[in-house]
Image 1 (cartoon, rainbow, N blue to C red):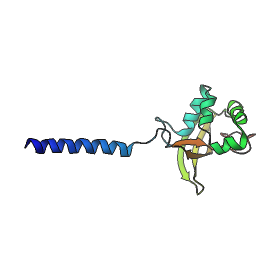
Image 2 (cartoon, rainbow, N blue to C red; image 1 turned 30 degrees about the horizontal axis):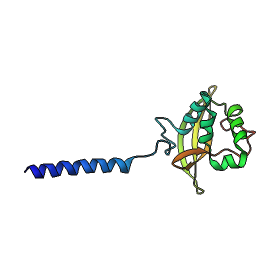
Image 3 (cartoon, rainbow, N blue to C red; image 1 turned 120 degrees about the horizontal axis):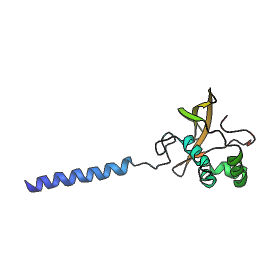
Image 4 (cartoon, helix red, strand yellow; image 1 turned 60 degrees about the vertical axis):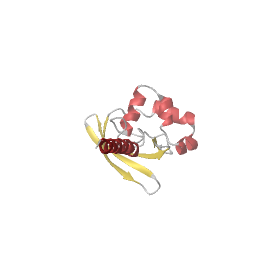
Amino acid sequence: MKKFIFTIFISIFIFMIGSKTITAQKPFSNPALIYGSDFMSFMQSLKKIGDYNMLLQFTSSASIKKIGEEKVKTYYEEKFTNMSKLKLQSIVNNSNGTKTMNYTNMKVATKSSTFVTIIIENDSCKLVLPVDLSKKLLN
């Protein structure tokens, strides 16, 4: 009887350990949920504290390659200024491997829609910047 109970206990323990490793997910791979927030709210918080190097780490490598690291950093300092409350409405999977995040933006009592393109690289969400950096990402 003791062997039977011991075997059941070990089986349950192994099952619990195995299920945790299967369901574990990287903290930045889900754009809708990053430490209790969504991706753009996370990016806004990095802007608020002025962590431009971290913002750069969450920018797609293709955007950095096309635009250049210094221009992207300048863009985040000067044009990434919308700190209004964003509410994630939906995420659309695109055929090219990117995702479009649709937000409702409340700025000065005016509700508008904003669309942001992201890509998952190295188990992290990365922002795909527009080629024309003269425009703001979030209106």
